[in-house]
Amino acid sequence: MTDTAVEKTLAVLEALADHSRITDIARVTGLPKSTVHRLLQAMVDRGFATISSDGYLAGPRILALAGKVLRPIDTVERARPSLRALQESTGCTVHLAVLFGDELVYVDKIEADKPYRMASRLGMSLPAHGTAIGKAVLASLSTSELDAYLSRTGLPGRTPRTITSSPRLKSQLTRVRRSRFALDDEENEVGVRCVGAAIRDHAGTVIGGLSASTLAMEHSLPELIALGPRVLRAADEVSAALGWL
Image (cartoon, rainbow, N blue to C red; front, side, top):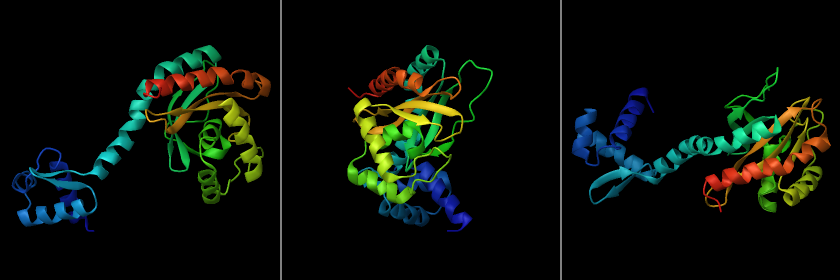
């Protein structure tokens, strides 16, 4: 598709937000009616537009894309009070991550009041199997879904402590299902430990999770485990804020 064709398609798509009739869309875009009709038909074929008695409307694929884009923003706003409270009660850096495909993406972060800063940043993506949030998410998958994930990713190592064995990861996930929180013992970043729990949307679907992160020299593994129930409580609060009862 040429740049000109892309521009025409985007112009029609933008006009579709305010207009439903070909005549009106042609007028605001300055395109011939025949061109508008052809582009709209192509959008209908691909689910980006739909035909109603009043003309053309935005299709299900546009609505689905909009939901994916807006969901992290809405999640951050609803989760922030619980994240702030968790950071203050633990003294740890707190992260919120949302699942995109096979990876998690950080969408919010509240730094601890420390002389150092964690290397993590908003927008950073990370594999699920080496993080506390990721393990909490993986623990929610069915056996077939987990096997498919393992087949796709191959469990690459990021540090000497990253779990790269499927049987070992599955064994750990069994424990995560019992406790409902997961640990990252320097598996994603050397010198950093985390404890995390999954969050669910209004339908009960796991969409990501939150974690409390600290330097390994500041918190031992038993101390981190002791923070697990507090992190889990914060995750449940966020899930409730997203409509999950």
